[in-house]
Length: 301
Image 1 (cartoon, one colour):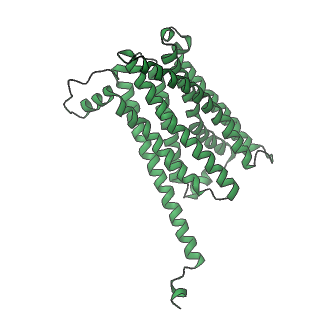
Image 2 (image 1 turned 180 degrees about the vertical axis):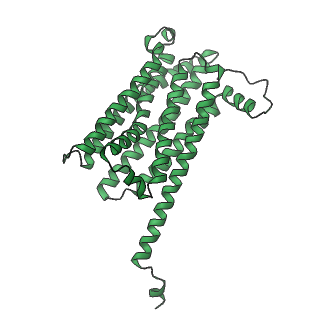
Image 3 (image 1 turned 90 degrees about the horizontal axis):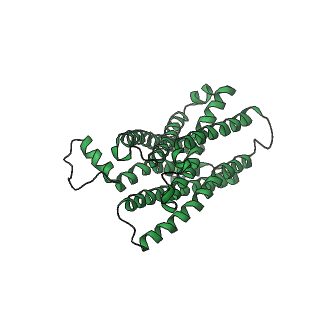
């Protein structure tokens, strides 16, 4: 009799499950929202740092931050509105769904191409240091990033149109999403990984030759920072692939929520790791908040 009294009815269990899901969605929205504002502040500091003025690497940092702002902002809006069906109804028209899917896909995929361009910049800074300042690629770095944003936008726009307009059995299957992820995300990630392995090996040779003074030390710190956040970015990609595989094979996509929790923390890690590695960044923050700066802290990163 006691067991029958304490046992939950199916309706109560469903209600509790929905409450847990709504709480999880709200938590993800909060995490992404905090990441969005932290990255906006991070972008402001990067733009203001004098030590980065005229430095090509500045374009890499800014585009990394912009990609984090895009993903955190779009996901914060998406997950804050997802529990309310008014959001879904508002984007019920085909054109609105195409715009929504394009923006979210752009935010999710641009980071892979920012890292690909950034890895080439690091390769030229470490492995081709003598020709770094005269390299056409380095001098046209902002153009490369602009082209990447346009390319990803066009591809994701085509993908959204196919998903919404084309009633093809192949496009509607889960494997289309997996194939797109592996092709459009994994390919630039593998390219970046291959380049950064060469960069890491060259860094080890530099360390063995004790070439760590002056400009070499600054370049080394910037490169180790870039490699660190790329590793975190790659971990997020692997979690995403595993989550999709589990979701499509079992029909339960709850694991995707935990992927987004990790992704939201990753979008903030860029800011904190850079602040930890950069003395000029910390010095600027102390000046901004009225703290007395340590005279021993230089402008060099």
